[in-house]
Length: 526
Image (cartoon, rainbow, N blue to C red; front, side):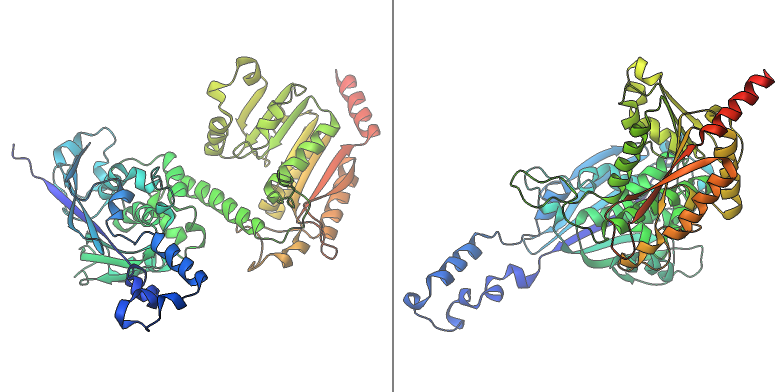
């Protein structure tokens, strides 16, 4: 059999800024005879010291691209891939302009023999690609394999270099999309997009796309890793839940505010709706954390440093977690259930308390439960400690006897994600059927939202409502009347004199007469 080889091409050029690279441009005194004539003896000592300091600063060198990519500009680098071969070489490597080229040869036979290969990702067979040479998820995988250290921003010898922005130009050959779609993805990230020509039809490719702008090399490579498969509209391998982690790790810093975030998530996750929902929830949580971190904070709420400087306030998320843990410990329970536990942030500290005989975590999402297992290190946890932990899928929309009769149930930032009808059902599930001795509830205080800069609407796109202090008090009092509880309210975070705290917490406790009546009815039924 004749084995046909296909290939993909990508190049990255780093150029130094002439205004910075030329000492004469940065400092007229360094321009020699063309500068204003000044007797050296008349130069003030401070100016001379500044000039000496300027000379100590390394001149920008475009060949630093080799350091950033961990690929020496004077060599050809070859790496075997599961589906072919990748080669990195430098067509130019001058001090003011340096270009690294990535040439990826794809062997369709090897590709089709991979156990993870999706034959439905190509419209023809595994041996014939109807879009040979076009940039696809194969190129994205090659970028990750060849430039993994650069994408992680790691450079031990010069740790500040990966965080430096440069004038960059990236060229991708044969992109399977038209200019408007390409621009819609890259322009919001600050890139100037230049397409050599438009594809003749929607099924053909743009011959060459060039991106120009200022960025770190790390940021550009990670953006390409995510967006190339999005433009291609498919992946050559089967998508599973691990792709959610990859998406958020590579794009979590910018995807939340990207105008095309929904199409990006759908196409990157191969239109798997459950994965898209999970990714959206986790991404929105990150956006909320950044918004909370930007809110004004009072001094004196953190831990002073060793020099006695004013303490740095802890993030609201950490303070909320600490407040809930403090409330639980004051109740001295033996069994606690975290309803909607997510990644298990609350479960770890509870397990560390030997007084907790049983710690339960529930979530409607299996992927969140799996993340909780990994975060808690359940596979490495001592057997006696692991025996006290129970993680299981459950929903507040139906009765679950596994959570009945616990000492404390926790709803930490949960109720605001429920529609009004679902909230009513959840109230019945928790307060009537599960009937724990205590219920700890936290939720945002909408009165405080006026203090968040640039916040338009609610704090989280998935919030169905947000309660004011008066609204939260009215809701809690109704719960007490309908289900036989009493309630105490607590502030979480620094309270503003006019609008209160950023988060509000209610601690419900069953009335003694209600608990006694239920116990009597249970004994009578027995």
